[in-house]
Length: 147
Image (cartoon, rainbow, N blue to C red):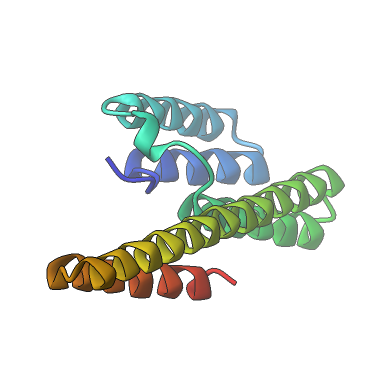
């Protein structure tokens, strides 16, 4: 299972926001129901490997918040504008946290790969040396991509 928000949840969030903007309780309620269904779908197969901050969900919230903020500003709806700004900031913080998590994992893999590469070299084991080099290069790339 990936960290990507599912279509049902995203559609529901959009409907709920549209309902808030146009003042339609019916559209807002339909959106909330679809979000709940999307959450149920996401919970199926959830495990510890897909917990934590995600660049994808952070970007979703940052974008949704920016849209709400812009619409709130255009409609002179300060409540919607502030709520959008808050969601945008929360999304941006999640993106930063995910980058930090990924950079840390990259640094860890880099060190692990360097050790494995050197042990392989010292032991005369070209397979270990090659695997270590692969881990080191992969870790360095992941670290660099998240700086």
